[in-house]
Image (cartoon, rainbow, N blue to C red; front, side, top):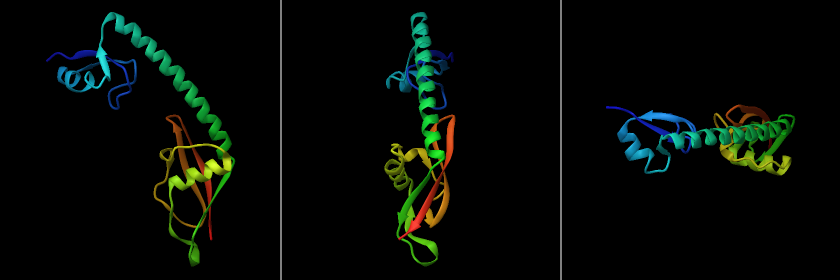
Length: 151
């Protein structure tokens, strides 16, 4: 069967980014991409529109990267303090989650982060200093030091 050429209107994981011209099976195009508004048929007029989409996407991506780098400069040099209830030996009652870290960053550094950008291998369950990875952009990932104090 012959593949269909489409212009992506949105980023589609595993397929391409907004403005890319891709070839997919007719069923995938007809049953998934086109009904959801994720792609349109590639015509000469749409090709020019796709180029405009790619340019605007690259400009937006550059702005997003720049703002993420600015936030990284602010946060890398700081130590974020989180207070949690702890028992003897520094073991916490419960744990410190990425949502609590995001709240602490907002209060202490005046930077609003989505909790999903904070990556913990597992929740923090002890007092002390911990390194936490933050990914604000595909190319901008940096560590932040979180100091957990027991109360």
